[in-house]
Amino acid sequence: MKKILLCFMAVVAATMFFSCQQSDGKCHIQGVVKGEQFEGKRVFLVPFSGSKTAETVDSVEIKNGRFAFETDVMQMYKILIDFRFRVGVQPLLVVGEPGEVQVIIDSVSHAVGTPQNDSLEKWKTRTEIHNRELYKMRMYIKDLQGRFDTVQAKYILQRADSFHLVYKNYTRQLAKNMKEGVLHDFLKDMFPLTYEKKMPDGSVKIMNADTHEEVKSEE
Image (cartoon, rainbow, N blue to C red; front, top):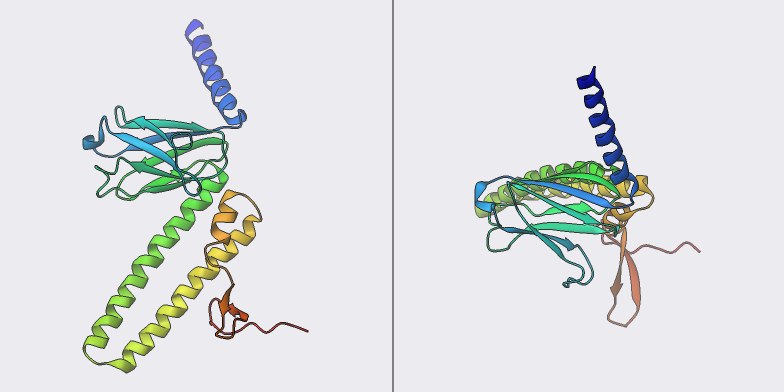
């Protein structure tokens, strides 16, 4: 009976500790680094945008393959291994969102545990697939051009452009669905629908970012 009571108290204590971390308004990043060569090296939590100074950049030492950060600033961060040792390690984007974020740093890095970071992880997976397939298409186009097969090269280029447009619209829709937040702002600014083009006469035209045609104003 005493053992059961002690186990119950331990579970309650752990639950209370976890609940406190969830409700303290801070982002608790718990990280694992794959590779013994990183033991004792430093890992950095760097703001994705804005100033990068001693006041805004945090760093800790990797011990027993693990590290931890804590931040109460809701923004996008990069997690980076010391630049002298980061070859073969993928930098990781993470949202400083209240809650527990579980991080794995490896050749392919991951972060999950909070709503925005879970969505970011899905977007990163889609992005990696997109980039890999688009690279294959571009290499094929280059090969076709080297063999002077311009007709087939043009056809594959059109397919590549369509493939990339699907990815851009996926990113835009994801940002739209989120409506607000750090990840929403990050994705929204990635593929704007329009851009400004300055003309030789000094005037400025609004252009469609996908077709590069002028957007006619509705009067």
